[in-house]
Image 1 (cartoon, rainbow, N blue to C red):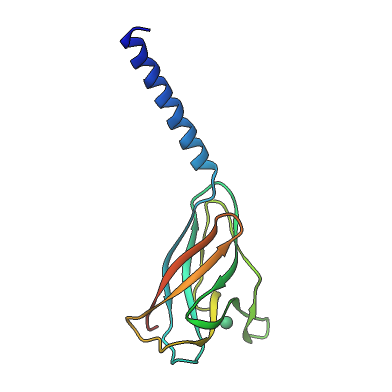
Image 2: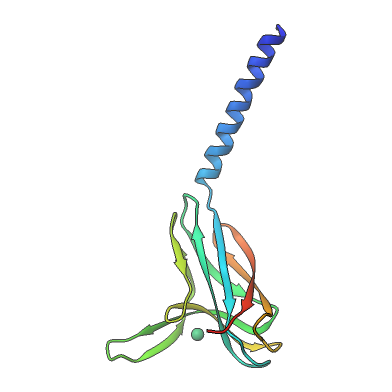
Length: 148
Ligand SMILES: [Cu+2]
């Protein structure tokens, strides 16, 4: 082969590799967790943590679990208001994160419930959250302690 043909072949191969990479990443699930924060609480107390999950990939995913080294228990909860106006919260096993969608955990909706926090959570501090998704597996995030 002439050097020119080799160069052409290399270019074609590079293009093929790039196309394959682009294809596989477009079809994979891509989960981004942003803006994680937790309400202040005294050591031993309970509190709630919030964050936004974006699924930038082409497959649905499901948040199936949460844990933290910074509290005795951590669980997924949902706050809702019933027909009579009573607000309560209940454990939920999972939160669906549809392909291309964003799910916000926020006051009045989904949240991470923490009980028995192992240290005083004061503004400026942080805790570690370990989130488990059905497709992408474990995602670790730092939640900043914030008022509000
Ligand atoms: Cu709760």
